[in-house]
Image 1 (cartoon, helix red, strand yellow):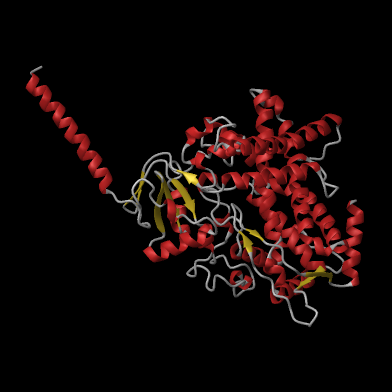
Image 2: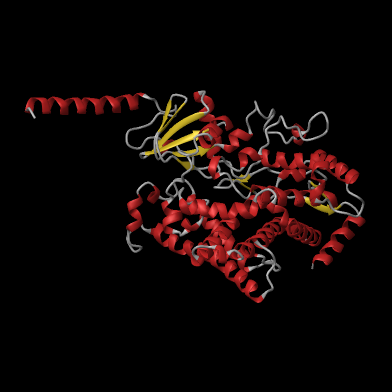
Length: 510
């Protein structure tokens, strides 16, 4: 070939590639705070209550989607349900991955959890296994267990009301350990509960944005533990013990009970019954073990923190719900799951609990597997996609007076749940292919616990020595989950009959 022609063709190819690259980068990124060379928005990033800062930036910039960059990492914040649904639902093929999470997945051993793992075959297999046992109809198999542990919880509250936070945690642990493994939680210092609490606490510390430099410089994971500045490696080693215990300890106990023929029905027992159908028995058993542990870490804190809510100190809502219960439920009986449609205000209280002080304000971020263009903005491949759930549930255009506790917002003129008001659960449990598959179980357990508490207890604000009402602080602890700080309240049976109901049911389930 003529050298001159070869050079011309090569030059044209270079020009084409340059033009293509230039056109690509003419598509702007979403708006965002000013970025500095190399570090981007590193020094702008909030370290607590991030959702409030993101919401403020969006309002200042007049956009419900913004772009941040931290040391080369692209972050896209979605501040409205419209944006999140369009990107994470309609473009789910692109935005269903997870961030790498070097500290948590690669050093602390959480890579078994399909809630945190990368999108792929193993993720699909575990999620399918979970959904088979926890779709909206399948969860009804666990209603009797949820009722039993709720009645035991009410008795603990009756005997020792001041330690209500501990009892709520015990209720959540009893529910999920029973559902996942068929294990009864009897003692307060249960080894399975202790292992899970340590694991979940370390997970929250390990996954906190910006907590460990190894997330920005993954090669640091190869630094020896003795090397200066490698304290994160020593922490990861210690914390990995907790994630291993939480995964292995209750599963081994469930297998032993199954072998002895003493096991209660559970996710583990149902799933292991299908071992003979599996192509690889070892892989299936490990998958059941991992899925059960994922269920454990995803459910426990969520349900506990919603039940431990300031809704109890809303006397008007409480009285209205109790009046509704008294008119529907026969005297001396507790609400049943079949009563849900006939108790719309109780359901409205739970919707408002979820909306008002949601405990997962940013959910778990997605990650983009390839580049996307949305509303004329470029979403770079590898972007961390953050859904600001808090902002979506406090959007004054969707929920007027969003910072006020108003369950009645969900009640229509006919006295039933108003379908025109956006259900907070459509946002709370995530989007697209990463939507929480345990959402039906979580809501059912919260509903029966709250409905039963309202049936037999009055929960009021305390009075100081001078006769003044002590108002709740409404303080929350900022972390991966926004946990309500303990607050004072007075929990008393509504009547002698209510007290007898609690004792009778607890005795029946003992």
